[in-house]
Length: 217
Image 1: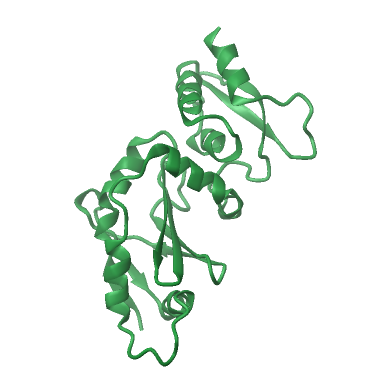
Image 2: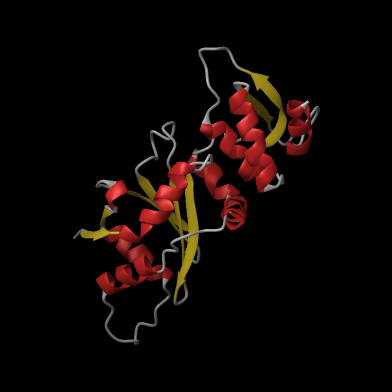
């Protein structure tokens, strides 16, 4: 049996994420003992994940993608929750079997009502970094195995910097939000991107501050 539900409270965060340079929606909310992390990746480059809502259930350590339908700009975030996800969400709540009847639709309404309507930018980046291992697994960043920043790269005129590559600056560096935002703006202005390498190859690495200083000069 499939349950249809509209997570319409995502509307504000969705609009905020679309306007951001990381093109990411991420937040965690609690219902009783359940801890639910919501993620969406909204760049045009996120073809495989653009209309998917990823729900990570922290207690049971399980992540489930759900296709989202409808006109999101009009507050339509329709999902069809199949039995396997329904069972996982109930399991995440760690309910006492003797605690009476459980109404799944009421739980979804409660979950929807807990969606924040605004997220401080610093808090959002903290959430991204806290869940960087999960994000790597989802392949929503370019070359997810490469997480060490190397240097800037000039692109040819027929190429543009990809959000999936620049997004990594927020996730895998410890630069401030302000510095990263400025760096991304400069990279786009000069039609540049950044190169990354793996943790075992740390020669000639760089930091957000170093790259920012170089581009500002």
